[in-house]
Image (cartoon, rainbow, N blue to C red; front, side):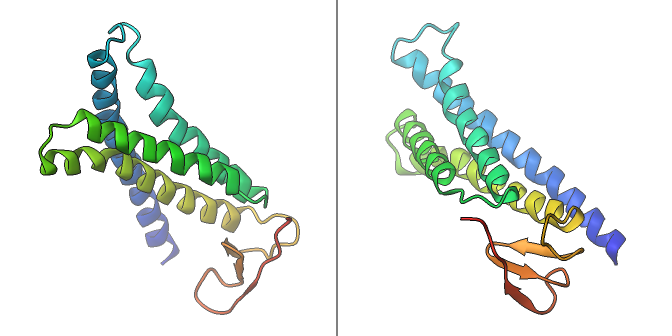
Length: 163
């Protein structure tokens, strides 16, 4: 059973990375085209989507680091949310004026946000499960503020975080 869980986790992580990469690429192209449309030189227009969508990934990694070090990730979450919203708005502005086009334009940054956050959640659970820190129970999974002593299939107790 553990081998099947490991295989499912690996395949899921690879698919999430593919989804995040695809979403990043689509949003990147849209934001780059928007930058060119407003007069930014084509040679440097790629910097705008790199900054905007790249920031979502950087700030998401800050959320993971904060979770792993048991810090409160409020500020990184605010940054992830703001830059995701910015990317959504700019992708919609780039879209045609039809409602369907605008809806489709919003999907890549939202998919990037959700897929990367899912990947971070899986990584966070995996890292805590495989490398318990000080005060953790070996083989335990920390999800939010709850400590599951048996990997999530039974009793959960409040888990202390530094704060």
